[in-house]
Length: 488
Ligand code: ATP
Image (cartoon, rainbow, N blue to C red):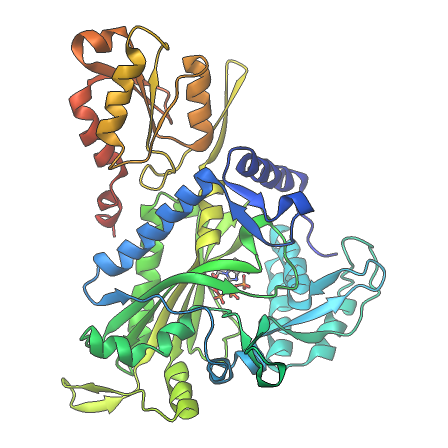
């Protein structure tokens, strides 16, 4: 049997999905037409969270390191790019259909999930044997063998429960479209399946114009598109998503040292953002991609198990060399220190903005019961929380709204602040808990007398009295990226 989520795992993910929809984080795309599978839209708080995560990644790359600069390359690229990168010929997933349920699966995922069941039952040996067999078959591109393995292991379709499988076939994941106004002139171009190639084809442009010396990196955030066979688990696997990729160009022979140091640096980054150590792990790839000489994933313990959030790959000189061959333009760098021309080797760190978003949401989602009352809140790191503070006048009269508005004016150009006066103060606190606002600032009658307010802290619900003049400093201290950077 393919792995089925346990009811508890399912329930937790379901709670998170419905919370995300109800409180303005993520909606199914074009929902009024019943949605489009594996495509999602971000709502008012979702877009703030996502932008904060992207900005944190961007600033980590481009500000904490002097030798990394950014670019923003186009989604469409010359079609030869994807020939050179290997995507036209080998960006495939092995797919298999169940003839009874008519459901399509990734054949490798069926086997991996089957192995995960053994792993969870404590039978690591059997799990390793299965993943080992799978890796060998995939390496040899033995698709018949993969089908046989599925049959031999008695893996059945979770929907129909049968093992009435089709053959395993390769399926290219790139979306294509046409450019050109006249049909005959039209030529097929692709929606980029990764942002990395936009960096590679600009390697020399950036190196020369930003006067970079190896080792140096180029960072980029942008949309990528993959026609994923199995689109499941909410925003974990989408057909349109966003990547945050950094290619680090190094002298040949030094790449494995850099690979290790980037793996460590990226793990530290996740920890600095507040993800607990026990929820993260490194996973070395057994089957290396055609371009890599070392590769690992950073995995997070999602409600559906440990899954990849970020990949760290030692891509050798594969991409630049291949672009040199196809374009017939030299992609070399002259290294004055060793007095040599060479094609640099590359370490890539690649993380999905949406997967990081899902990680943050899963990690933040907290249910607590006290005195038989359930409290749900999102425990985001204040630096990435969508709203930093809510300013709440205790009542709608006696000049309290005016005083509260003055505070909003003072804070709103530096922080995302909301102002709310409707409903009881308790209800307003709850609303802010549900979107993960770290601070609620209550303005009461005493405020008019002595210019103090109460700050209510999201995680502890504790309240303290502080002077209005302290607010800016307090919020800045808690929400600054600097606190995260200092831990790197
Ligand atoms: P997977 O094995 O999960 O398909 P991958 O190994 O193909 O991922 P990479 O090509 O290494 O992924 O892409 C780098 C990162 O981009 C991944 O770690 C992930 O965070 C993100 N990513 C890849 N595919 C998707 C997708 N379909 N939806 C959302 N994010 C994705």
